[in-house]
Length: 94
Image 1 (cartoon, rainbow, N blue to C red):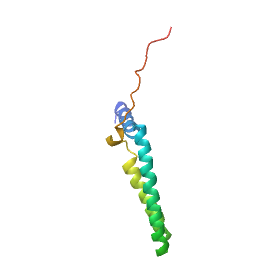
Image 2: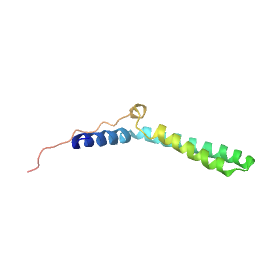
Image 3: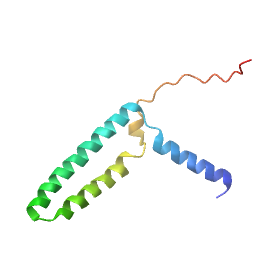
Image 4: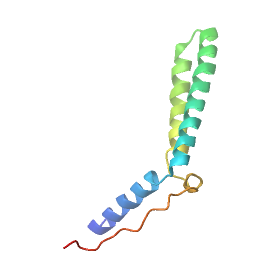
Protein backbone atom coordinates (compact mmCIF):
# COMPACT_ATOMS: atom_id res chain seq x y z
CA UNK A 1 0.00 0.00 0.00
CA UNK A 2 1.07 3.54 -0.63
CA UNK A 3 1.65 5.86 2.31
CA UNK A 4 -1.62 7.79 1.78
CA UNK A 5 -3.65 4.61 1.41
CA UNK A 6 -2.21 3.22 4.61
CA UNK A 7 -3.16 6.36 6.54
CA UNK A 8 -6.66 6.28 5.09
CA UNK A 9 -7.05 2.60 5.99
CA UNK A 10 -6.02 3.13 9.63
CA UNK A 11 -8.16 6.27 9.96
CA UNK A 12 -11.25 4.49 8.61
CA UNK A 13 -10.55 1.50 10.88
CA UNK A 14 -10.25 3.84 13.88
CA UNK A 15 -13.54 5.58 13.03
CA UNK A 16 -15.28 2.22 12.48
CA UNK A 17 -14.33 0.91 15.91
CA UNK A 18 -14.58 4.14 17.91
CA UNK A 19 -17.54 6.16 16.70
CA UNK A 20 -20.29 4.98 19.04
CA UNK A 21 -22.70 7.26 20.89
CA UNK A 22 -22.88 7.40 24.68
CA UNK A 23 -26.27 5.72 25.11
CA UNK A 24 -25.17 2.79 22.96
CA UNK A 25 -21.96 2.46 24.97
CA UNK A 26 -23.99 2.02 28.15
CA UNK A 27 -26.34 -0.45 26.43
CA UNK A 28 -23.43 -2.51 25.05
CA UNK A 29 -21.81 -2.53 28.49
CA UNK A 30 -25.02 -3.90 30.05
CA UNK A 31 -25.37 -6.57 27.36
CA UNK A 32 -21.74 -7.61 27.81
CA UNK A 33 -22.11 -7.96 31.57
CA UNK A 34 -25.35 -9.94 31.25
CA UNK A 35 -23.91 -12.35 28.67
CA UNK A 36 -20.65 -12.97 30.53
CA UNK A 37 -22.34 -13.38 33.90
CA UNK A 38 -25.03 -15.71 32.53
CA UNK A 39 -22.54 -17.90 30.68
CA UNK A 40 -20.20 -18.00 33.68
CA UNK A 41 -22.96 -19.09 36.08
CA UNK A 42 -24.42 -21.72 33.75
CA UNK A 43 -21.01 -23.09 32.79
CA UNK A 44 -19.93 -23.20 36.44
CA UNK A 45 -22.99 -25.25 37.36
CA UNK A 46 -22.42 -27.65 34.46
CA UNK A 47 -18.69 -27.87 35.21
CA UNK A 48 -19.41 -28.52 38.88
CA UNK A 49 -21.65 -31.51 38.15
CA UNK A 50 -19.37 -32.89 35.43
CA UNK A 51 -16.29 -32.16 37.59
CA UNK A 52 -14.48 -30.48 34.71
CA UNK A 53 -13.45 -26.90 35.44
CA UNK A 54 -12.15 -26.49 31.88
CA UNK A 55 -15.77 -26.32 30.67
CA UNK A 56 -16.26 -23.18 32.74
CA UNK A 57 -13.06 -21.57 31.51
CA UNK A 58 -13.54 -22.36 27.81
CA UNK A 59 -17.18 -21.32 27.71
CA UNK A 60 -16.43 -18.00 29.45
CA UNK A 61 -13.57 -17.33 27.03
CA UNK A 62 -15.85 -18.24 24.12
CA UNK A 63 -18.56 -15.89 25.37
CA UNK A 64 -15.98 -13.11 25.72
CA UNK A 65 -14.76 -13.61 22.16
CA UNK A 66 -18.34 -13.66 20.89
CA UNK A 67 -19.14 -10.43 22.75
CA UNK A 68 -16.04 -8.74 21.37
CA UNK A 69 -16.89 -9.74 17.81
CA UNK A 70 -20.53 -8.68 18.09
CA UNK A 71 -20.40 -5.69 20.44
CA UNK A 72 -17.00 -4.03 19.95
CA UNK A 73 -17.37 -2.73 16.37
CA UNK A 74 -19.43 0.42 16.10
CA UNK A 75 -22.18 -1.13 13.98
CA UNK A 76 -24.79 1.26 12.56
CA UNK A 77 -27.24 0.06 15.21
CA UNK A 78 -24.97 1.62 17.87
CA UNK A 79 -24.85 5.00 16.08
CA UNK A 80 -28.49 6.07 16.40
CA UNK A 81 -28.07 8.82 19.03
CA UNK A 82 -25.11 10.80 17.76
CA UNK A 83 -24.46 14.03 19.69
CA UNK A 84 -24.81 17.36 17.92
CA UNK A 85 -21.45 19.04 18.26
CA UNK A 86 -21.00 22.76 17.95
CA UNK A 87 -19.16 23.85 14.81
CA UNK A 88 -15.48 24.55 15.27
CA UNK A 89 -14.41 28.18 15.38
CA UNK A 90 -11.21 28.35 13.33
CA UNK A 91 -10.79 32.13 13.37
CA UNK A 92 -7.35 33.31 14.37
CA UNK A 93 -7.19 35.27 17.58
CA UNK A 94 -5.24 38.51 17.29
